[in-house]
Image 1 (spheres, rainbow, N blue to C red):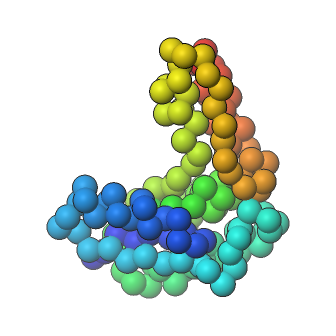
Image 2: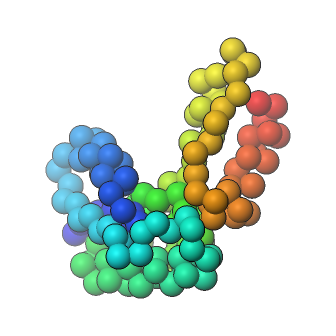
Image 3: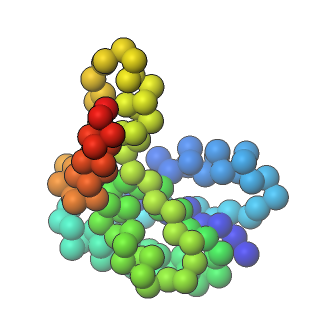
Length: 136
């Protein structure tokens, strides 16, 4: 069985590349929803529909795990996907915590690049809130 990678475009290829280095004996499949890109300018409902449609198609490939290599898709759909499918589903989110950890001693500010839709979601706000609670 394969490990599937899903992205709204091609950015997740860098994540797939690292997985291939870390897990050289695994088989992988990559699915890019280039038909509906970009996700970040669409409504939450549209993105959820696109992601569910894509993942339904991916699951038919009999994958053993799924990586959602898209911040926007993760912020919109990860909870529903995890409650629907009985395989491990790993999501991507903006790397706020490692960025802050790298700059903690310097006191430098961190710039987060994300789609407007990602930044509006509770998942992102919860992430920032958790990190703020750590005193960073």
